[in-house]
Structure formats: C-alpha cells, structure tokens
Length: 323
Image 1 (tube, helix red, strand yellow):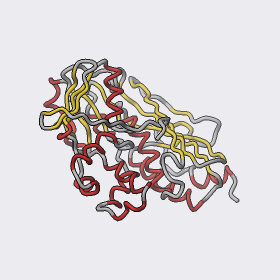
Image 2 (cartoon, rainbow, N blue to C red):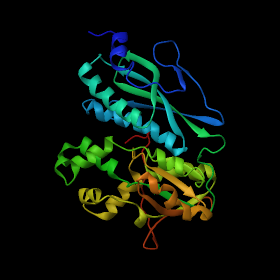
Image 3 (tube, rainbow, N blue to C red):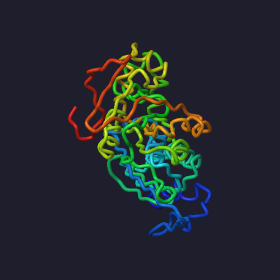
Image 4 (tube, rainbow, N blue to C red):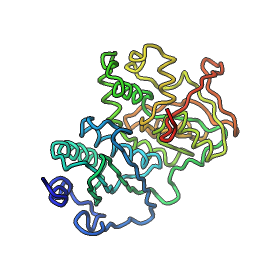
C-alpha cells in the first residue's frame, strides 16, 4: 500500500507551473508566498463530506471539480482574483484508482483559473475534502454583503435550479429516465465559478453573494447585512429549458430556481446609476446576467409574478436543519 508521502509526491507535487508570487509550495512545514502591493487577501474555506455533499460512489473527477469550484465561487462573490489553494484530503484508504481522476480534474480547473496548490494534508478517515483558497482584491474594493441600498436592482448570473434537478437524480435513480436527467446531473457537479463577472462588477455592484444554499436563503444574508428588504419577480428568474422539461411545469421550475443549492452563480445588487453599465461590463464574460428584482425598505420581502404577490412557502438549504 502506498504511504502518505509517496502518495503526495505522486499525485500532488510538481503538477503545476510555479506562480511568481509563490516562493515555496508543497514540501516544507509551510508554504511561502508574496503578497502584491495595494491588495487585500480574500480567503475562503469549504469542506465537502461524502454522504452530505456527494455520494461516495460519485465520479472522483466530478467531486474534484465541485470541491474547487465551490471555493472559487466564494472568491468570485467578492470580486477577487484566485491565486492559491491548499487541500486537506481524508480518505479511508489511499485509493489510486480514485485519486488519479480526482487530481486530473482538480488541476485542470486550478490551471484554468491560474490557481496554484501550495500545500495541505492527507489523512486516514471518512472521505472528506477541505479546501482553502486565497485571492487578491484591490484594497477597499471587495464586494460585500452589507452594501445594498433601497432602490438597488437585484441581478443573478446564469440559469437557476439545474443543480437541484441534478441532485434529484442523484438521490432518486428512478428520475434518471426523465428528460435531460443526465445533463442536469452533470451540471450539479460542474458549476462554473463566475470569477470574471465578480471582477467586472467591482466598480458597479453594491453587494454580492454566491448562491450555495439557494437564492431564497442566500439573498437573506444580503438583506440582513444591509438592513434592507427585497421584491423579487419570479417571472424574471432565468430557467433552462432542460429544467422546465425535467420538472414538467414552469411554476415548479421557478420554485427550484428559488431554492436550489450548490448553484454557485452570483447574486448581486446594483445602484440605479450603474444599471446601464451592467451589460457592457459583463459582455466579455460569456454568461447570462438577469435582473430579477429590486431592493426595498427593511422587513419588506415579496415574491410576485405578473404583478401579483405570491404566497409560496419556500426555503433554501440548511446543513443543520432536520429534513
């Protein structure tokens, strides 16, 4: 059986070109990096646990993509440019048949975004993956949750709800024969972090968050931090044709869009004076950006369609809420 250090050397060391700001990566007690001038360091840590975030028999390459994409999405939400990542991997046994595709997909995505693995840890235990990513954002320009003001417009990137449909297929194999089930399953694991959109919106957005627990839950974090309310137009929610056919009606698809977790799209707010700049600023990003509502005074929360209020009772994902 391969030992820990042989495993690290074979699968994690010398897999990437060295960034100029990395003095020392894996191989010592600590990594050494240099911080550019006039930037703040954005740092995010996420853990994915087998049985909670993915099934143990999920394709290793898909798990790797999901793990890194979820962390990069946090950087995107603050407008940060990804730079470094560390990985703590816990496995029952050093399974090379699992590690090879995991590492291949992990480094493919890391290289695409210019992120270098600078260290981490491997240990024996139930399968789990913990990543810490770090990136740069110009000083005092990071997008936060606390900047939304009454009158700002609410935007989201991409299409919402597909991840939940893919999770349905994971949890209920009987749904694998429904229209577009396999495509939606793939999308559940293969989110695209909206790094370019986050960077493009630095001069214009007043607040931002990534959608990891469902739009209806995550926008509440902006409302709470900014002391505001919101009115959301359910008819404006961006839906894929695959989702609508999978669930078989548009209102159900809209509820998926409101509650679907692990989307890793961005939700951000834009003041009226910058609304006209959104399309131009994001034109090079290659991603759909949709206005879905407007910020209202504190304690106002409304879902509406065709101008009429909706009384839907919907909620997003909570790790500690009993199902």
